[in-house]
Image (cartoon, rainbow, N blue to C red):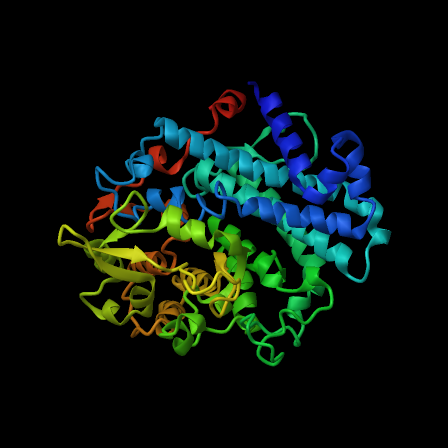
Length: 497
């Protein structure tokens, strides 16, 4: 299969899977686009179709949150007899057939979403008059933001980091719905195109309802609108804005990408816009550590700036991904204690207490189940806990980490203060940093605790070109052979790499 055919299949599969209702009515792709995009609801359904596609197990409902990226970051126990499907991945064997199949599906899934954003963007301007209120700006802004977000994760996996080689070949930055081959952009060019899309999205989303004073982040079980205004809008599309790439999520993504580019001034500016909005409150300890399951908030829901809505994945997460002593993901007790530094102040860390559950195995050893995403077993209702089930994508804590990193050179005390605000929210005492290097070391340790089973730690090691913390406190040296995943074979030919 050549690259042109591959892209053609991505186009077709994305086009046909955008909206099931539309597909049932009009399966002929050549004549369906005009029908889908003849109404505002058609654009909204197409946009929702992209979000839904992204929550499947090959993307953020699995591999890019709980799976491949966490295995690469050495965040799970990988014994010889356990989890053979992922063991070779943990050893960075990128020639392993199962790994190749998995990472190729990730690539195709990301570009499936990208192609569908382009389909929306190609049609939306000429249909601006069919939209009510500010919906044109919201749909277009989200489509632009999604295009940048998905490209960025492709870049972070399949290309050199900016700090290593900004002029290296990056990825195809696809901005047109077309079967024509898109040339490779360099890493720097790709980053600049993402920033262009996100800055345009940010401008369009200045009217986002999440910015209004009446939009108060809260739990879905709370009907008091002084505690939760997220479902107040009469339009379903404008409810639960944190399930979409909202205005502050765009700011957070910009902070991420500007930091990747090492533009710390703009990264800090965007991170502070999220922080200073005071829209995302720290989770109350009483909610985090609540004994009663139905009153518990394990994923720190109100702190999510953006997350992938995955209520249907609760059973899959338990049965497929996380159970100790089986072929699923878990931690040896010692590894959990190393990650959370329980020999010191980490013993007070509520994340360690609430996200890991120690289990005695028949062999006599103890392992730790990862229960971060566990749902109330007494009910399968969406609101079985305080919150909807989400795969976290952008957290408030990350904005504090970015602020800390961006201010460390000029204000080390202030940088440590940003980090210590997160530690305090997790029940821990603060740290002091005698140097910028020490602060970075502490940031890496804290991020690993915060992002366990969220798919972000591998990216941080790569961005900083730092060694990966291994299973027993050892370190795996930074290397492009580890940090750059091979492109799909057709893309290697096409990209000349």
